[in-house]
Image (cartoon, rainbow, N blue to C red; front, side):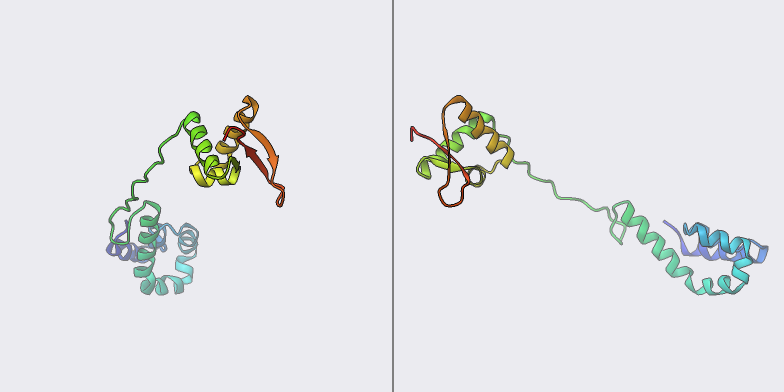
Length: 155
């Protein structure tokens, strides 16, 4: 974090022929070297900076705080702890899918399985395909939409 007093003291470097030190201090390297090699942009830029230093320091400090995760007051940002969804095994997912299919008359689509179990599309589709390969369910198409529907014949 930069201090305004130090920036103003570095501005006085122009009296010793080192213009632009205050810009280098505030990480404005291009204009800082331009000021350094042109004697403060021929003195005009150095004079104008006398009135802009305060905002320049505040801008630098604001960028610094944002980069390091601090609020404008300097207090660190704290993210709320995320509640992780409990992991369910493939067997637990299969049981949830069977119960969901029982409620829906023995037929369930992948989307309905996702809604009823809370698992991802890939997890539900993989579980239903595994049950299909094992012979627990059959595969059919919905008559109106053509979506793949898994049919539990024993329900």
